[in-house]
Image (cartoon, rainbow, N blue to C red; front, side, top):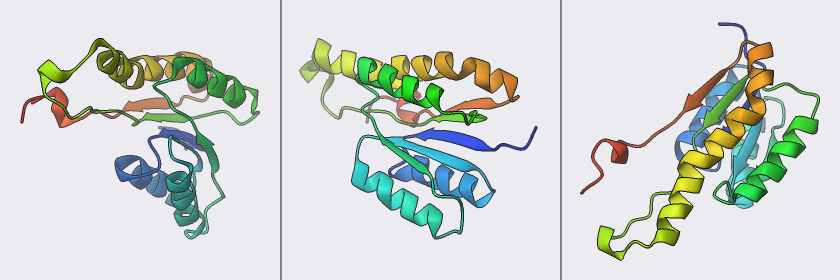
Length: 148
């Protein structure tokens, strides 16, 4: 696999997304942090710079909001840096009984967990191909065992 240079990580404010961002930064990647909560993203950015890695770009984006995601994609595509790695880690997992769920809850989860990764992959596809990059889609064990 070619040396990765720039990675876009969604859900980068905490958990797996934060840890993946730190690992990639420690290996020399320039990181683009994406998530909903700017304070959490800034903390991830601080941890990355503490590694003496390049300062990451930080974008607060609600990926469940598809028009907002598309605006974000336009901004990213205007940047001359090509993305070598896309880590689709952001997700929502509404914790409620099935019978309490609404169509709005379902649409929100569908947008965040399925449609926004598609939008990001489609938009970055040519850059990923050109740079022999890759996509990592992170999922949850809830997809295997959705009931407690």
